[in-house]
Image (cartoon, rainbow, N blue to C red):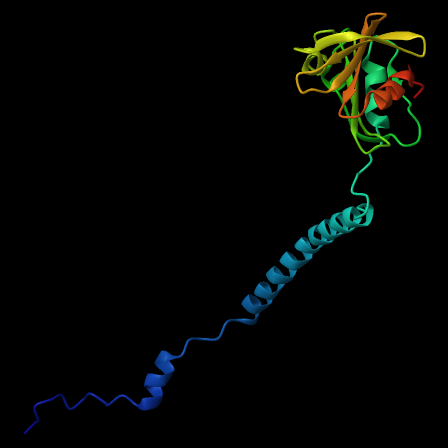
Length: 207
């Protein structure tokens, strides 16, 4: 006589249940691959981190908390303009106290025979701003940005050359003249004497 349940079923051993719940350990190849992936990621990021730190350090080194003005070297801009322009480039050389802080030219996009303009910005000895623009196009954007809407206010003589004095729409003084097909403009928040100094220092670019 048999019981109610099957007599052939063997009860599950506790060790068998525990073994069923355990996952097989990862193979050494998988562990090694994971380690190599992490190491490769660190190695690939390290140069980028070092470059960023170097840039930040260089900027911090150059920045003087007592003199936050960052001077630039306009040589590359002037050389490009000198090569592309169809005229002898004229630029200021005001000497000590005038620190160049910006230099721009449209010569990079100029084809043969196209007009070329140059804009230079300076911090003056009195810690004001002065700008110089030269172009063989009187309608150049850099020229019009200063002289459009400006009100003429007589003329001044600087080193034997006559410059037109104007008051720009922003209330700044502008000195301008046209010579040999070129339009030259000096303007900024600097006083007129410093603007005259900048205008009087204009000479052919020597490279």
